[in-house]
Image (tube, rainbow, N blue to C red; front, side, top):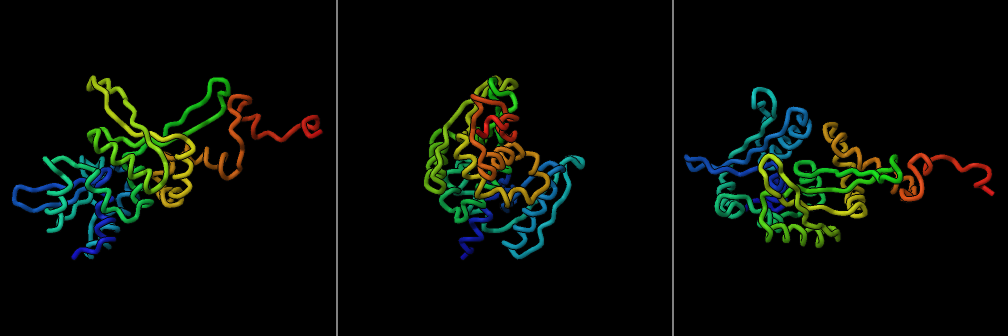
Length: 241
């Protein structure tokens, strides 16, 4: 029987950019494709799969050198594909119950399909806030709700379904969003793991900046009363008295 922890680690790679495929010859494979700038992150995934399946998994370039790819075939993927891809479409709700390391899964999911939404208040142009989004536009409403329940159960945070307009496709698509408080709470749990990848430091720069201010330095959020510079400047003599 396939080790449940190893199964969990392999399946968490499918939450985001990873995919299971059924080939015409009956074999099934797991494939992951990332931009060339994320080669360090892809190398880590290749090593993880190597450790899970006890075989060397190599990173190859694709798309004329613009991407880095990982592929591995295994008999177990046939059953996984049948269960997690009903109607040949990925259903994240069927993957989540098998995840045994939720923090690690969250970190991978955010690195793959996440986004840090920064914003500044008009009354304090130098202030900054940040919150997480997870793009789940290929999942139906029932699955979106299952994802929300998974976050509530495992992290006690609340996600909301939002809609974004795709101008090119001329349609709305759903994504999941959380507030800054919950975003900082989760970031505190996974930041050290994510920031080990140089390619991810830029993507998560805003949430890290806010984390340093609000959590590490404990500077209160006074965006409506002062500017960012006001918050970090030392008090004047008149303010001390």
